[in-house]
Image (tube, rainbow, N blue to C red; front, side):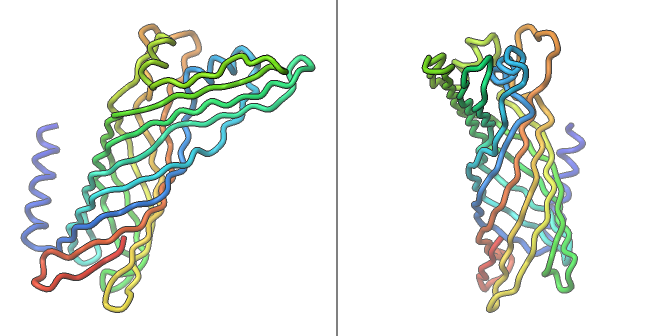
Length: 244
């Protein structure tokens, strides 16, 4: 691990000496899901897998640093991302209508490290990117409500920690994963416009069981991210504005 950090520091030092350096801000929309969550998984096992997962929308934002040499760049970020899972049910079970919703809202601070390569000439045009990230879960909320016929079976809203503790589970505050994406750098009146679409896949379990149940299935975050941002070139005496 120490060797990896040393390599990263050396790369940044080289880029600082020989590259263009940009700093800026980005924001956009997230569409997230997860492989499963405890409450939904337990309900599915009891009711024969009748819940439907639906997209959960949220936001993203970041402070972005970009160290660029011609068509290649290294881009560390300090980011905020919303993640989670949403599941709905509206089906007949034993001749009675069962309706409900489960909503996990998870809020992360992330530190991605992305590697970008521009396919166009002159360092502008379409690009590809890939990298890894570390995320810290600093807040979360869980909501569930469902009815069986006219009978309200559950209507509850709790912090994510209270939800997990009540189910014999606790939140995993730490997450590692990878991101891949594509985008475009578009010259615009002496500036550049950047637009990016990313897919983010978590590689660590969202929840930690004290005792793992039978047929245990891990929960992984999955997020599609669309974003734009402003970036400023800091290696020139004349400040230039860029969009990402």
